[in-house]
Length: 261
Image 1 (cartoon, one colour):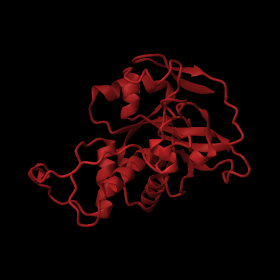
Image 2 (cartoon, rainbow, N blue to C red; image 1 turned 90 degrees about the horizontal axis):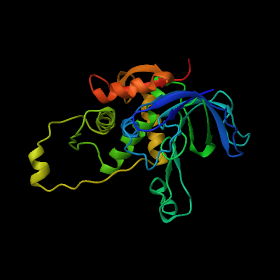
Image 3 (cartoon, one colour; image 1 turned 90 degrees about the vertical axis):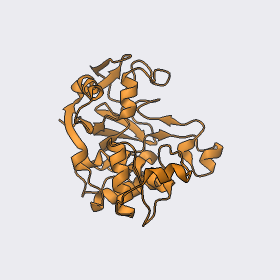
């Protein structure tokens, strides 16, 4: 099989790799798509060398087919799944308080641990969500950033009738706008009032399982339009060039690595 390997600042290499063997609580996945996001660009530039090891494999926005799964997991070969790329301890205060995405020992798959830019990948079955048949592969590959958007909108407490301004027009900003629009049609916003009234800002990090479930519901129902965000698909061997092009800017929203070919 093939895997993309990080070799240091601005260097990715596609290399042969050994097909992994799953543990009892894991599924073996055949990766179909992996998205390039802003975090990946920071990795490419060497900004996360304190977390991403040399020889590591990135990729946390993934769509895959199940190749093998434990019989009691509820997943069977051929199921399409997306991966919630978090490994949590389950015992710290954050985990016990129901906010495991703030786990004191949090590890992100594709950053701190091996990710999905490889043909086969082993992932704990409790990190998998089944993809509705209504979603095409490219759309399903955007569920992870859509989950970021649903979490952000939920954290902001957006409700019908609210006026919302989204700063930043990249994929996450566009998705936040679409999720917010689903709760309230867009209206003009007076930025002066934002400052003059000392409105409160809320921080937001990652997502909870309910955010993934909402993302899948919205996408499957067509409440958000994902397909136009995909600028192009490239093979795994072109990851290096894809990163370089993304850094140069231009009319690019989301580039997907196609591993199905």
